[in-house]
Amino acid sequence: MKNKIFALVVAVLVCCFAFSIGATYGLYDETFSMQNHLSAGSLKATLTRQKLTTVNIDSSGELKTSVDDVSKDFTSDTNDNIFGIAEGTTVAPGSSFTAEMNIRNNGNVAFYYYVEVLFNSIVSDPTFASMLKLTAESENHAKQETLIKDGLTLGEDEKGLGTIGSGDSETFTVKLEFLDNANNNKVEGKFVLFDLRVHAVQKISTE
Image (cartoon, rainbow, N blue to C red; front, side, top):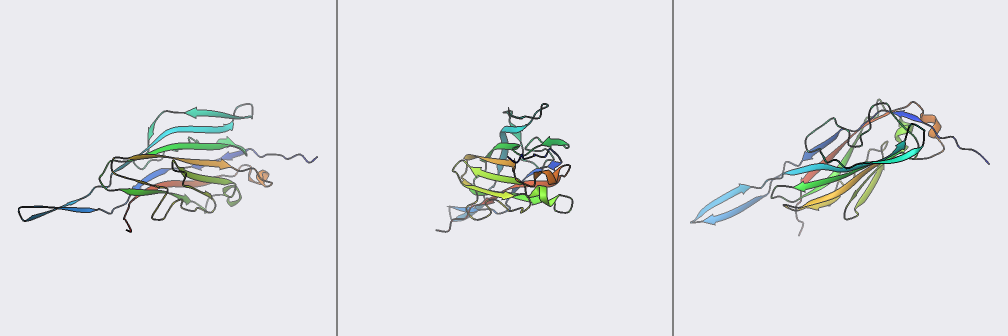
């Protein structure tokens, strides 16, 4: 029986989570005493991490699950890491980091949202990046995934991962997994650099 050796990898995974609001505005009109009043609608949103579930090796080298349910705001651009992965964190095949996010519409313009993966291919190891899978899934089960190496944008169409009306909110998850495959040992000591960005874009009806 062939024994499979799993690699332990010192990973530098810098996941800055930026939030972008689409710069499009909806107009509505009101007519009083023959005067037209036009007001620009507002696209205002907040992004919060509600929970982080980590599956990673402990000091004994075994995979263990831990949960951080302290709410953390990610509305503004930040260098904070939504997955809580510090520089030099040791991970192994089977490690995963799942961030439960909440996006809320505080304006009066409906929007759809999507997740952009910004992969730094210049300094990253491509083999390691091909073993890291990112999955985004909305509470309505709209689900898309990409390998970090491919850097695909998740939900970038007119539907997005979900549509949020004025005053509404939605929960979605972003999960990072270190996949188990035959080439795991080739990435010992390698690192990957990437950012994530959530976009909120005005929803325009096609009807």
